[in-house]
Image (cartoon, rainbow, N blue to C red; front, side, top):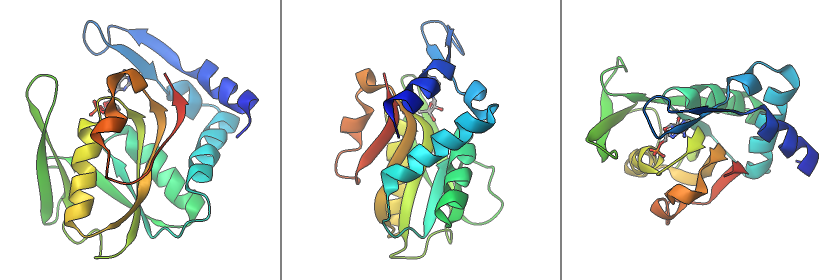
Length: 177
Ligand code: AMP
């Protein structure tokens, strides 16, 4: 990924102040998704971070992680697994609660989604505090996945999510703020 390509991606991201609540500067990635060249650049960049490592499955996190994760899985030639908000998956699930800034949230995966020893990549649009990704990585660990690493389109480094994910495999991000 060239610096010029990264600049094109960075310039396409729309900052939306005070969404979904006051004080949050929301990184809107829909302009990247809407542009045929940029969406390809983004997925190529995420695939480049994984390189030629063997991967069996990509796990994507509800909801924007489904977009990046499923495209990445197709690009890598692997299967895709959704990690969903509580109550959305139809089959037997394994779930975990995790802390948000205020209150808690729950995320689930199908209990048969990952076979023990499968080599799995986690993908999401954005790493903020790392609470969500940390919970999904813990579910992957409980499923005895061989965690290849995590790849994010955007990382808000000032929130320290990377530190929260220490020991849960390599962390890659394309654009850092
Ligand atoms: P966290 O658990 O704090 O790492 O939050 C991660 C999830 O929240 C990501 O999947 C993002 O989709 C979403 N998110 C958090 N902060 C932002 C932000 N500033 N802009 C866009 N999405 C965000």
